[in-house]
Image (cartoon, rainbow, N blue to C red; front, top):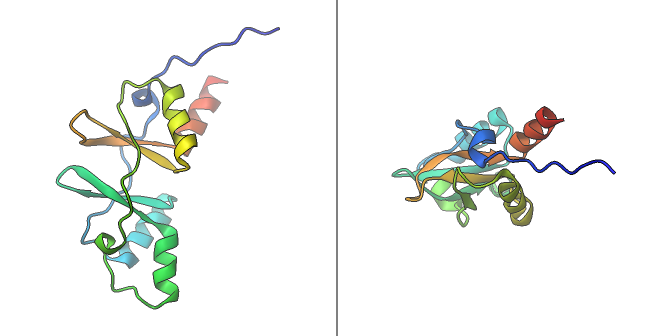
Length: 131
C-alpha cells in the first residue's frame, strides 16, 4: 500500500491575497460585472475593513428578472461568509469550504480584518501543484 502523505500547508500558503469584493453602496450592475470579471458567484461586502456578508449572483439575477436593478449591495447582503485564520491547516480550511457549501471562505486576522480568501480554485491549484 502506498504511504499516505498529509498536506502540511496552511491556508495562508494557498489563499488568494487579492480577491474581488464590493462595498455596501456598490450598485447591482457593477457587482454583476465584478462577479463576471472575476469568475465568482459570491462577492464579499466589505466596510471599515470588515465583512458584512456577501452578495450572491442568484440574488442579482432575481432582481434582474424583476427589473429591480436600482438596488445596492447593502440591499441584498446575506449572512457573513465563513472565516478562517491564515495559520489554519489547509485540510481544515478545505473542510470548512466543503461543509459551508460556499465558493470561498474569508481569511481574516483575529480582529476580523480580511487578508484574503481561500477559494475552490485556490484549492484546485494547490492539489495540482502537490501532484
